Image (tube, each protein chain N blue to C red):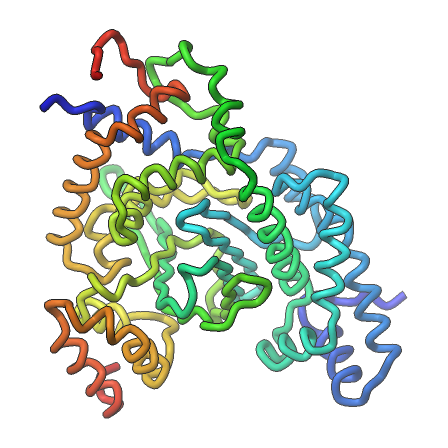
Length: 229
Length: 190
């Protein structure tokens, strides 16, 4: 049996046959190739937190999106011979998963916070976020609290980039914490401006009662009898 | 007034928020055994609200950004940092950056941009920043654009400036934005 290369090559030929000559057999073969990826797509959807009961539907929808003739034509035009069916399928799936998660996040958010209140009274000397690491909703709540305090897109990005991420969800971790000079370059602002805004933003956060309460509630800081109130 | 949180506490909190679980050994092994290499992905939570997908091919890399309303028509800079050599006391780093323009039309409520970086195999998730027109310095932008591996065309950049004119009008850099627009239109800036 002929081995089909998902990353260009034969996919390109199949796309040409379907889009240029209307070859239905070529389209069916493309569909079969895509369906062969279902297990990986399903695993990916589940790894993003989609429950088993919904994951299959989402994968089906993503496959349906990806295999629409207009969608195939778009990647064929955009990437030419470098067309990558794999990436196309994952891109469509990510769109579906994202929409699904967004809809789920619109449910009352205090439920997620409440679920974390079990950690109250058990603060650690070196705060870590065992729950936050797993709970995307809670991370969103956290960053929303920061945004609510700062009320500024630029300051939010400065904080995000400067504190960086120590890992990504891919196989190869990359340390992404950046200096303020690099942050300034990323945002196309002056280094002085980045320094000033960083200083003001962190000061604001340190004095923000809402942010403080959130940190306290989930055990990131210990009141320690300081009686801040 | 006494601060509610000390600077050290805040730094620890932010570091903790940003940290994510290391992929388990099983995941790494499964990934290594998986025949077709999976794209790398990362979701930045709201209010950043962006998903990044990197799919390294044999010699090229596909980058896909998918964001919510804030990313509509945004000018975005992506930067890959990689350590290419290390000595006992300092590291040499090599970085690569690109600019791209997010679409103004949404698909399923999301704004998505896919680009292929020819001749660059990148195996990490880049840092991503959205240029905020109100605060950006056109001279800094021009300098970064000049060294970018990939960037929008002069016409696309003019379109971005025009789309943000109202926001740029009140800024101290207004005249420089107009000068940059003029240079772009004469195709002598980049």
